[in-house]
Length: 260
Image (cartoon, rainbow, N blue to C red):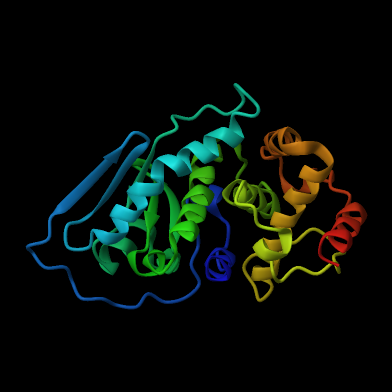
């Protein structure tokens, strides 16, 4: 899970501004796929996974957890019935080569394990076959649920929504029901917080992601699951300047109690 946390934490969360998840390291060049490789589409009740027939292992794993991942996101969002309208189907793409990956998401974004994009073909989740293949099945499910949450809520979220809310909520949905303690899901956390996290693109990004997640857990302790979803839906359309509804002192006290 720590491996997945690192992958999620290097995301600069411009998901709603650019329709992408941002990468920060260069792409390792891989050989061009053989001409004998063919496009393969695996279909489930909740979507499709498109890949190359020469690199089908990750696609097979993703298709095996896609229905569960979509259902997990839907179960959380359905807590507030009628407020989130989405098709509850997701198209997942595993590019056959780095060249194809870059063509889909751009060179700056191509080092992430998973990327939620919106382009002329609609909304899709793109998996980096190298990075995503290194994840365990549990980590892959968490990654898919995180990105599917972005897909499901994108139209409800302002381009200027605070990143701690957008990414914290996606993580909260992704980790929901796994039975992990706050310390297990966010090992870098300390109670020494004085303000909401903002450094999602700099050296403090790992901690910022885990702090954002912990805010959602804190809100859940006070508001319940329904309250967290309603909080997100109420504030996701706002800009960072409009949002001043988190009691930082209460969050800090919660962390002291939860992780010591």
